[in-house]
Amino acid sequence: MNRKQILVVDDDQDLRESIIEILTENGFAAVGCESAEAALRAIRIGPADIAIVDNMMPGMDGITLIPILKGERPGIKIIIITAFSTVDNAVTAMKSGADDYLAKPFKRDDLLVAVRRNLEIFKFEHHEADPNIDEALVCLANPIRRNILVILSEKREMRFMHLSRHLGISDHTKVNFHLKILKSHNLLSQDQDKLYRLTPQGKKMVECLDMLSRQFS
Image (cartoon, rainbow, N blue to C red; front, side, top):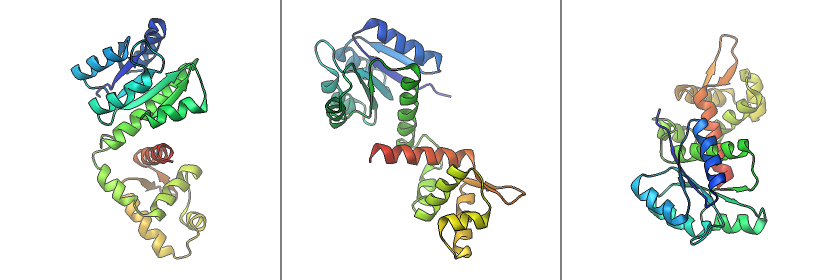
């Protein structure tokens, strides 16, 4: 499995090294950069999938760096970090192209959640999440099929009649048709007790759709 490259851009050496340590301990490949200028040199040598960028740095600041990084590496996910947790800062960062926002001091788990969330979005957008992602997306173009996945994600397992009632569809032939399509794409399964459940691929698809909906909401 390829480890995803992460740039950690922060002039605070202690914080930069601490972030790198947390990331490497959790299976990520991280490179530290002490300035925005160093980050630009690094990304031209080897592409990164995520950049964790401090807002306030000597020379070029994080907000200025964001669109330049996006130009150098289209699709890169940028997590901006700042000591000032204000709505204005968050709005400014997002308008500049940031994909996520962490306020200092942040917890170890907050950092890892943000990195994993943005990595999944990166993989989803670059068709790395699954080799059959195009077919799965076509499958989920239908709102009934999306609703089925969401309901099963919440309820974990359901029988046909119970699921039909939750969908509010009395036409059982229609429900059965959509269930068959979802099964054919390996997004759900049915056991010997006639209980429908999401497959691992189905769970991953729900997570990806949820992340994308929050990103663009």
